[in-house]
Length: 380
Image (cartoon, rainbow, N blue to C red; front, side):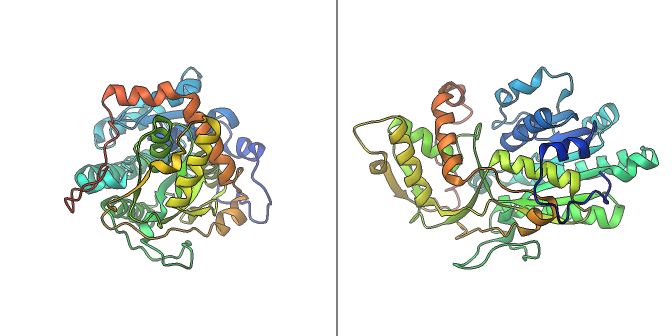
């Protein structure tokens, strides 16, 4: 993965490109049992010859089931470690000797960050600090060639840039303006990753992505909430007027972009990843209602279940991503449209009812509304 392995001017990122560029390196994926992390692990297994080390503390949102197809592969290893445990983290680096890190471990649900911001500071800020320090120490133990090729991809969110008005898109030069405890902790971790490169020479690359959706997304998030509640015939809560706009990307397209950045990105650079599929929350809800009704016919149209509820405190108005840099330099393109992705996602949740029903039965999540503590407001 030397910096000279550029894709500037190439038209398409292929599986062959990834396999050749990544070779048989050992890739440490933090948060690999999470929604995006598990997609990255599956993609590494399916499209590369890399050895995969999944480091995950197994939080409430982790899904070992998402790794069932990977778990038996001899190239895959699992380490149940909390990034806040510096001794255990150092031990993973000593045992596994990674050639690269894709850092995805994070608390990610904005509503939970409103109710309990401390967990976000610990995981997203302290955890990232510990990982950067462990990577720095690990680099010092590597031979010169391995040290020169080591990479750390720090995965972040477009939410660090705050809220857009009705026009414009975020790009790599956008000003940071985080509005929630979640986005503030992710912004802090971005700055740590950049500072450790400038000060200590840790070869970091930073990515900021839009809203992900797809298989194995924990039911507290917007799209699975709508799908599951529509299937149950329950009320579908729409925050405020539903006019908030998000830029949606299928999780498997995001995973492929991350491997592309790891293989061909320039150290010290930032890459914004987006499918350029902006929709209002209300529009997404209506699409999902219609897909559920078409797939599981019923007497009552699911749209009648929609109800506007108290808005999230500090709810950002609009996110939109200019992904021209990652497309031009890495050759990445999304592989499916939002319409295709939502249809396949609705079908996945219908076909995997046991997966999400087990989450509710286990008590890990009961479907309750979170994030209203700041105002004392009440919603469904």
